Length: 153
Image 1 (cartoon, rainbow, N blue to C red):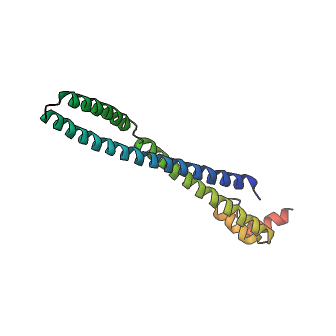
Image 2 (cartoon, rainbow, N blue to C red):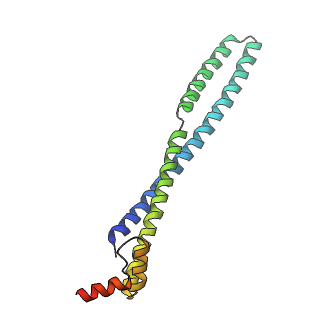
Image 3 (cartoon, helix red, strand yellow):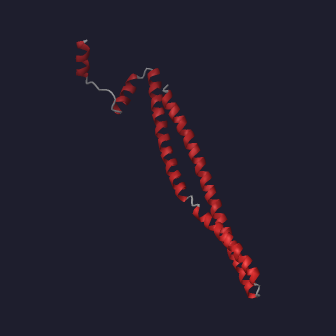
């Protein structure tokens, strides 16, 4: 058995699993960030209403205190807006797709190898020879060329 193919396939499966887990972590983080951003927006709007109410009753010091709180929330919101993970998510999705493609190719290679090995074990030379010729491996002799080759030896 070709241990290199098996190891490559196993490592590929592990890398794909890790990439998918990282992608899920990023997506979950982005969803949480978006939720936090919306919550901050809602709180800012709520505090702006409080500030308007404070001004309408003439309580300037309360309005100032609320405005300071709004400024803190706005700074936190700006920080959340800067942490956009969308580009990282797109890049990781591309990596996952490439790993899936490579893993499929490795699996097919491994299966082809195992099929050929099984054919050899069962003495199915003709079938293996046909598969090799179809894959462009080896040279197919015509009957006359085979007779000449046998006659020369």
